[in-house]
Image (tube, rainbow, N blue to C red):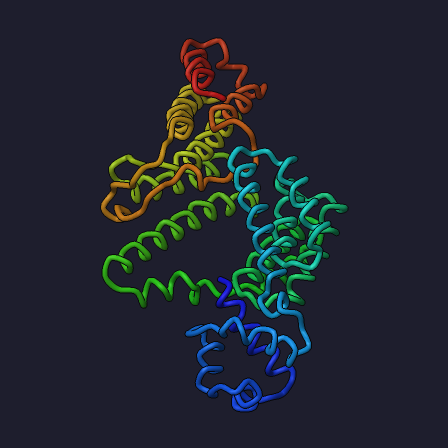
Length: 358
């Protein structure tokens, strides 16, 4: 990483001073080819040349070597590693405090600003509270002005769009229109270009992303209009069906989390209809997938269309403490389930969820 920093720093300093590689080489008493290699990262200046280089560009040797930049990067990487632990355990308050501290230390670093945007509204409140939204928008706009990193800008746009939805839908649409087209995406193009095992894995990961997008979009349809409970149930069942088609051998891994969510929604809708049999059936399915998520370990997916994809538990992020069983138990407290609460099936479901809840 040090060599990469130096090559970029040398090129920047030379261009700022408006001198050619040949002019710099003549000053140092070396060949222009040597300077070219340094700037391509194919070589490194001899240590005896560093003071002369620093003097020529009117910088310190530390600045030339990007020592301060390296220290900053190391510190921010440490914050990112610590944040990953908090996001894995769902400790939102600790994660926010961490990035507030980082922002106080590095207020102009786009990486820090982006992580603070995520942390401020990690609870996913809708609509976002106005005071939170104001800070997120200010941070996001700053990133869009400063950053040339495509992924960084895309992430900021996504958070800005989610933040404005419900507060300022016109502004949310403006941010939405800044996103890329569904038909021209990084993942789609990489799936097209890569070959062999690398290409297979890329295609499988992309397919999982497409299924996830479709499964999340289907229930949204029902929220946009005056859909009946039955129609909304169908939207959730569509999502479950495409998950199960992808995970054709039943090994759903991490996606048990999403399937359990859909069954919770279905149970609530059947309870609204007063349909005891279907309510309990949906609660049993929710219980099964909640326990699957709660007991999940590192694993390989085994269904034919995704058998090159792995799940690593340490990489999972959430905005709540506990696991799916905790969420399901909280859902079951709703008065809507009172009409089945005294049944043996309901009591068994509660007992099973409590067994695996954190």
